[in-house]
Length: 107
Image (spheres, rainbow, N blue to C red):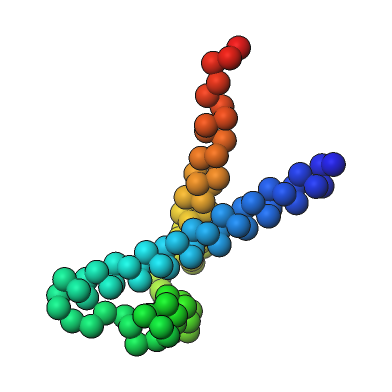
């Protein structure tokens, strides 16, 4: 029973991560299209039908960029502070469904 609960929490967390990442990717696409229309130029419509594949090509470009290594800094803080920040924001997103169930004045 306990292992099943952990499995469901992990699956819920994985679905949450995928949903947030896809949402951010397509909101970025929407922002770029709106800015293209405002500035009277072509937006990100070069890849796929109406630019649908643009967020995925942006992700590939982001992950294949060259890494820079700071010489005189703390590597742990430099590399893991964005990860910790991202995880904290996802933990806050996880609490939103439980927030509405906690407020119950039927006691």
